[in-house]
Image (cartoon, rainbow, N blue to C red; front, side, top):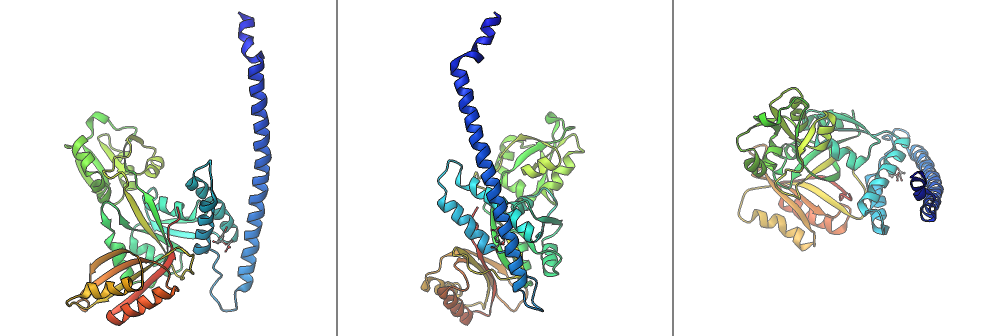
Length: 380
Ligand SMILES: C=C(O[C@@H]1C=C(C(=O)O)C=C[C@H]1O)C(=O)O
């Protein structure tokens, strides 16, 4: 009996396995050492970049721009283009996202305000875009995020702008009308909504579901099918919904995984959004214009006078100059003076010749054109 027990570890086959495993681990240890050295060399380069940027600053100039969105987008694009596996292309780019985030933090720690509270999808968008190495500040309203960036209290702000199921976030668009901030980037986030409960919730007695209005709308069909008689209570954010559930025995919340983690809730039905490709787009707002990255988008607001053929005359220059329009939204004019206000996104950078020509043509036909910015298209 005792001999039999010893047999497997003594067999030649398993000791060969162990040797192979040990050799592979030696290889991994050696590679880790090289990776660590290379990351340290990269970080030292970033430190020298910071010195160069600081030296280049002329007396009386604005502080140097440590964060360069166009350069970061190019680095990530190159990582993805040359990648051949076996790790997934996006997984590799995410690793580089974090390496760059840590390198930038050596130069300067970015402060980023976002539409909070903590645990919302917007916080997830901040981390996806900037990586973990930033200081974040949750604020309770979109215009507060704009105000903090305008006042220089933070470097950048992140706000939601459109959802693939529910459409535009009108409040964000309207705030741009009265702001001089620039759009410096965009983030796209796949949105998964989960049904979650707290430690005191009695599953069979759930009579109320808290969530943000948009999330309730994104899960309407699922709720109709699975919990038709449960009251749906809209609250100010998904994180607020998750917080409430903790103290009520008959309530559940719909929110994202960050909120579940933050408030220690149990996800009882994951991914209950009606559209499987449900995603939200966020904008990064800042005070500076971003140079060309090679794969850019531009956003403008155009005010046109009412009249026949207005939309045609607005769109015609884009068509003539071969510009790919990616979004067109109409909003009521803030004052009676303008009949229409159009929010337009298109591919290309304001420094591109055809974009400059198209903008000149649009400016001739419009009451006013406001350039919100050119910025790198979302890479991840
Ligand atoms: C190193 C630089 O500064 C920052 C850090 C980057 C990086 O780690 O690759 C890229 C762009 C900047 O946000 C740079 O400007 O090249």
